[in-house]
Image (cartoon, rainbow, N blue to C red; front, side, top):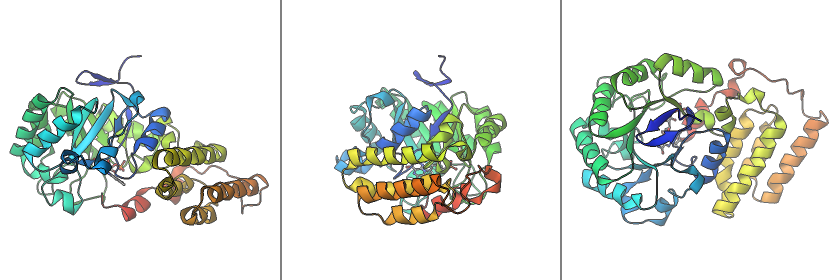
Length: 349
Ligand SMILES: Cc1cc2nc3c(=O)[nH]c(=O)nc-3n(C[C@H](O)[C@H](O)[C@H](O)COP(=O)(O)O)c2cc1C
């Protein structure tokens, strides 16, 4: 199989990638998405300061399975040049294939302190960081950026060229500014401009919700890969290029159970609570599941969780759920398919 593109010398087989998502792209979910076709693993973003202090919770975010290598990227964030470089050197011993610097987080206590999207305001600092980073570690270094701080400072082309000139091996671009957070529509024209401006691979990101969107963003931007965030929560089928309406109830329920088990294996009892946010999203594509959703998000025991799923499925099979024919509804007709509201309500990214 030919690689779709390379991150310097790391071959990437495939063009769809699960986005780094705090609280979502942990080891259990990354493994599911890789199995379904995500071509790379990005960890949740992790603080350089916490890593340098070996805070166990931060180190845990860098847990990985050997099968994820070498397309395994540790994503870090920070605002201090020396600390970013030191943190990258500190975590390289853990064996990532790639180290990514977050330059897109819009959350105020990150970007307001000059980390995440805050770095976009300091192009010279970005140049220094990448110049040093690319020499300080052996693995390729990459960046995930937004288009700029606000509508008056959309400096994505300047930043992209600086990244390339200073040793970055890939750029992922979320087509919004920091000020926009998740408002408006991702600007795919800007991603196309970045792709034209640099020779390193460019990953397009923002508002890809369906299989048709994947083809559209690729045609529109010429990007080397497509990163999918919100629409991949509770929906790893997108990496198989399947829309939710094409996934059977049986497949959804089976994966719900399997993902829960993976969470329990990894987190212990806490896994059930942590799984709630995923469960809600798995059910988003299922008609007549609102009662089930309520049950699962309040459920306190694993056996009760399975009982609720069993009862739902029995009623579904017997046709006892209201209008339970499960005629697939194409996404454009079904508002519940849109992930935006739920994701942005719960998260400031
Ligand atoms: C819950 C959540 C957590 C996120 N955490 C991160 C993160 O840790 N690092 C990062 O670079 N981006 C993070 N993002 C941003 C996504 O990677 C992605 O850029 C953004 O959601 C736009 O893509 P989408 O329209 O496909 O969702 C997060 C987004 C969400 C919704």
